[in-house]
Length: 238
Ligand SMILES: [Zn+2]
Image (cartoon, rainbow, N blue to C red; front, side):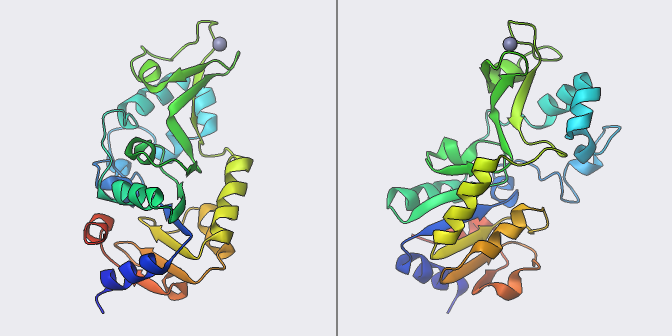
């Protein structure tokens, strides 16, 4: 059986689907994966992205952090692609219970999916570090230099930076969703980012599906592995 037909069958039979997605979900919307070889690593900045997106860099070089952040992570005008839209459809049908994502681009929310667990936070919500007032993405991305609250405090994006812990509640809800799923679809991630990758170990359901262009270290544990682009797979499904 062709692999996408096999996936269709698993989806048709499933009642509690959870999708766990990485950067590959967004690349087809034109967002670069900064871990990939042709991603942001080879760009013009003096520091590598994982340094510029660290908490200590944010604290010590706030101005430079926001230069990079506003230049590279502005996804306000990016649109969801076939993968986001297909998952939204599955949620509407009551089959998909949660999308767990490592992406901060807000594309699942833009597609209309309601239960999105944002492991690495989002660029769409920002808070003043002094008074806690909330600001939207427009305010931060259109600000000059360091975005400031009306109280004078620095506004920090609700994005989990390197060196920062994941949000406890999001982790708990993600593990719970995975534990309850009968079909777990892992897509667009090479599963190397700890601790997100280890979440898969909580899956006790029937079928684990991995869809990724390259092979992953979890391929051997999966019931179905598809080495194709996500969009190519989901555009064939109904
Ligand atoms: Zn403030």
